[in-house]
Image 1 (cartoon, each protein chain N blue to C red):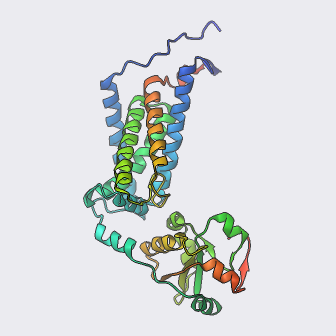
Image 2: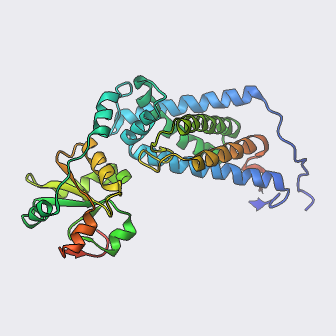
Image 3: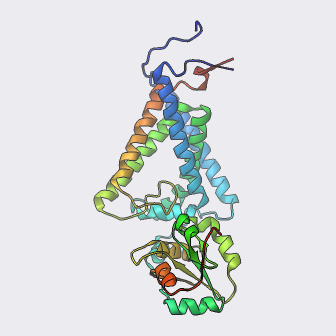
Length: 150
Length: 173
């Protein structure tokens, strides 16, 4: 196994870093939520955006979706789909954060598990940055095979 | 260097079919895995059973306060377990003797350790540092929502305790 195409050309290498960054974020966020699903359900409820019947469904499925996305991005399987869903998730999170920042609610972010810090504009900026990183990975990532040869 | 593939730094052609197909596979797999594991695990959530009135009740319930004297009397009778809701570094520097360190978001996975310390007669008292500190209230609420029956907050607990000269210790627990 030999390394090739690294560190240049620049774009695929940057895309690789983007892909791994998103994977790490989702892996951590997903695991934290899986540990305490009840707290995460409460955090979702606090956003006051979903009806009761949808809250536990989301609290149960979203963490596993995040971990699965992380695995796909790490091992480079279904990267297009995974980075697309990742960008979509960050967009949805950004909308939810914006609505509640405008409403002025002082609620837990729920970004990395249930009882984390209160929402702020910093979280929104971080979320939009992660969305941009996901889109970059979607457009430019070339998978592990691009960097390694037998 | 001959075998290095030359590429142009242009984005891939966006093939919507591939994206949709891969996304659907990932979504179906995630939902299947999530529902299956949720059914198997002990701390499972009822999929459509979220009750906001119950949760709101827990959130809005103010946890009863306890005075320093009451807390110390219970401490002397070994009828209290103190939960230090401050950060681990502050805890290591000094805490009420016998206290356990538990941040609000740690309650779920440290509950068993706390329950092992509780006897039939003992209550849980949370504390942090300063009157404005919300951590003792948040940890108490999390404990209550996890089924710990009697939880009280010692407001400004660390300051009061140390100023009164009551037993403290250092290090991790």
